[in-house]
Image 1: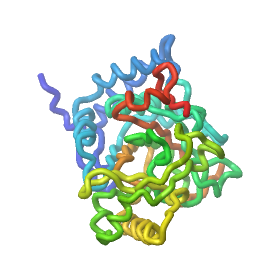
Image 2: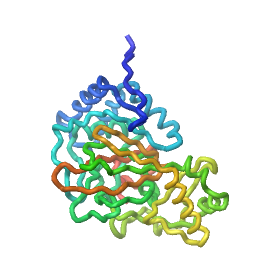
Image 3: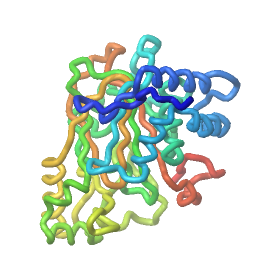
Length: 335
């Protein structure tokens, strides 16, 4: 008989969708099968192959929601699904070291990877977080003012790795722990709403190659991009009525007065249309990195083992296009 359980139901208070408990249990059971056996290292080709196959066994309503989002990511360019299993009682203390990643298969890492395989293929960059496919986003002592995933000050709007010839198409976050005060917010703003607030002159300028975007602080100084020099690029590209974005407020520099004005106007439009998502354990957020910028509000870490803990994975819809950057046809871009 067909499964008639309402696995995903609308939830306007927090997540866009909420996974039903029965289907959350099914997700947990499937994820656990990826956490045993001889190939349980997240970055190994054998484990990735198992996770890719396991995607087909996730509950149909979850796969259907992700498939629809993949076809069109909607006005906000984000999808937030609540109720995924993270087994808080079994979690170790929140990591508090720079460069923290998840190499060992766990239920959250397996869930992230299965979702990534449903959207495309997982992707990582050797110069960032040592090329790990599943990365911890946690506050690190002494890096409070760091403008990146280890900080706790406000993080300005950006698309992920827009400086690179091959930025990810999606960024996925899974919340394992919220911050103590539950004030940390993942901020997102989609071009499909922000575009309506731009003047024709600013739109035209943002499509012109009058901006330079350099690597973010998380990549460190001197990061290679696969090109001899970082060349001027437009902030917007593609269809005039539904463009893609490449921009990071911290590291995108306008090269002309009109570019400065247009970038400022674009920032105001993002602020005016932004959403703030305050994640709770089990919340999964998928950001369409092609059409959405994201950032973070400030929060106060305590470094007591129970701080905010997200895990992150990048996704590409076409792994082939970055083949010259990936040794041995792996999932890590070496340059």
